[in-house]
Each structure stands twice: as C-alpha cells, then as structure tokens.
Length: 271
Image (cartoon, rainbow, N blue to C red; front, side, top):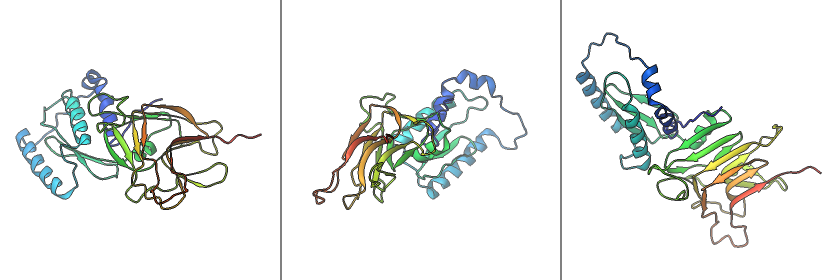
C-alpha cells in the first residue's frame, strides 16, 4: 500500500491526497448541525483575534516563503470543496520541527514545518512522502521501502530539481555528523540522505528519490572524517531521478583528505 504522507511539510501530501478526489470528499463528509451560541461572524472575529495572538507567540514563516505559498495554494483549493459553512480559511506555517497542527474558530489553520525525517519515521514501509519546496537543514536516514518526491511551488518538478522552487536539503546548523559506516573499514560516513538496509533484513530495501537537491555547503567537517556524501545507498536498491547534488567538499585547508562524493553506493558481498 502506498500512503501519501507529509506532516506539515508533509501536510502538502495530505492536502494533495484529498484534492485528488474532491467529489468524494463532498459526498462522504456531512457537517453536523449542533447548537452554536455564536454567529458565523462572531466566530470569524474570535478566530482572527486568536490568530493575531498566535502570530506574536509562535515563529511563523512569512507569507512570501515558498513553503507557506505552497501550503496556502493547496489549502485554498481544498477549502473550495469543503462542505458546510464557507469560512474564510487562512493557512499559516509555524517554524517548528515538532509534528503539530491546529485550527482556530472561523478559518485560521496552523501547521508546523516539521522535518523530512519526521515524515519518513511517521510513514509505514512502502509509503510516498511528497516534500514541499523549501530549505531543510537536516540529514535523512531511510531504512525501509520508501519513495521521497520533491514538489515544486511552480506546480512542476523534474529537471529543475536544483532550483529555488524545489526542496533543498542543506547541512544542519551544527554541521554534518556520522550517520552510516563504511562496510569494509568501519570508517564514518556523513550522508545528507542515507539509504540503509537494516542488518536484520532478508532482502535489500528499495528507495526511490525524485526532484530533490542536496547541498553540502557549511558541513563543518574539521578533519579527514567522516566521509562527506550527498546520497549514500548501502546494501539497498532503488532509482534516483532529477536529483541535484552540489558542494560535497571539505574546507580547502584540509588538504590531502578525500573531498567528498555527490553520490555513492556500497554492497557487502559474501564469498
């Protein structure tokens, strides 16, 4: 089974899933008609006042941010098919990595930015995670059958995977850290995306990566190790389409060290 998930940055996947069949949404959701002591206008006003307070207390991405623009576009498309009261929905992205989302009376909806790793961890094997455009300062480890697909804020993706309108994974603020080990000498590997078949698995995992860029700038590696790699597959299979890897290089003062690899694959064979 393929489940399209993204939690908040994978909220786009959830919205896209609903948009795929808006008529089904309208047919299957019937709003309740319980007692409400507030008028619609009063609920809208209360929600707007509460949203203003939220904006003062939480770190919101600006409306000009590509992630916010993308979530707003999908949200408004989905809202157009929502049954019941036609609330003035507004969509806001909170710059926090924890998975969370909440709604206020009268239409304001807030979703946390989240991380790609959170989307991977929350999804069952065989899922597809659609990643919103934006910059992701993290390292991602995938250890199950999975598909990771970037989506462009322009509504297209593919050959322009390195463009500003597509998701880009960059080095974390604390720098790149070891998240895999060489199969032959045990040395550390710092990969921006590491695809690792678990040692307990009876067959290789399959991971498909599409329309994403990885940028190794500011990796803060201070010696000849760990080895810097953009995409690293270990005892795993899959395909890579329209993925741009750049700046997989160590500091110029680390002469004599292996500079880094855009992509690498390793397989341990028994003889």
